[in-house]
Amino acid sequence: MIVSLILTTAADAAHGQALSSMDIGALIRNGLSIICLASGLFFVLAGTLGVLRLPDFYTRLHAAGMTDTLGAEMILLGLIIQSGFTLLSLKILLVAFFLLMTSPTATHAVANAAYQAGLKPLLGKYKAPSAEDIGQNNSGKG
Amino acid sequence: MKRFGLVLAVALGLYWLSLSGYYDNVMILTLGVISIFLVLGLCARMKILDEETVPYLNIPKSLAYYTWLFKEIVKANVQVVRAVLSPDLEVSPTMVKIPSTPKSDIGKTMFANSITLTPGTVSVVMSEDEILVHALLEEMSAAEDFAKMAEQSAWAVGELDLPKVEGEP
Image (cartoon, rainbow over all chains, first blue to last red; front, side):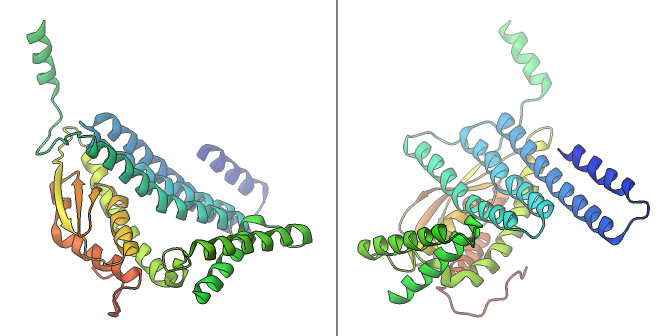
């Protein structure tokens, strides 16, 4: 998607012989929205990595929350910039607002359910096992 | 109660107009007006026309609060990303009980929602006057940060009247 946006911007710029002020405006708008979309995607990626890497249920919730908040919000902000000052932008703004209201409620419901069911959280310092530890464990078992 | 009904009618009307996008079709507009009156009638019958159903009077304060909260979210996100992407994944999960100072239900909800919204902290159990919070990093469970957030969310729902300067460090 991002690549195609860059391509359309470049094509727009190539079509006009001289860059008029409108082209520059579109260029700035596309640039800003690409920055927002890319950073949103970065946070979604980091959140996914966190869900995979973190040790227990409660710590994984935090990583999932990251995708909900800054990941989704930055992507929506990028879309708002892309669509400009229209009714569509207002609707995306409403989506962003409702996401901001509902996603913490859902996270709290899941966390509360796990706690009520008696799932004990892992507390204290945690460090990912290094490659040598894993190797030793494997050799010990074998 | 009458004032809340009026505010709810205006808010629903604006909401309906922004979602529909058709302003010249008389039949659709009539149906919109009918549905607004239906919702108003239901709310009046259920006797829930109060601050909780109609929180629109606090919108300026809430907007100021959300801009402040967004900065906090960005800061916390950077911390969590750094912890998650570091090669040895050093985290220190902590559980803390923190007092929940806002008095009204909506203030408490706002506070607990804000805690969960900031990555790295999740409110797990809510009781009358305290919240059990799970934090990903130990330094995120500082009591004074939560106290500040509680004060801000109480201000945002109109509980505190002290003139607060938003966005101060």
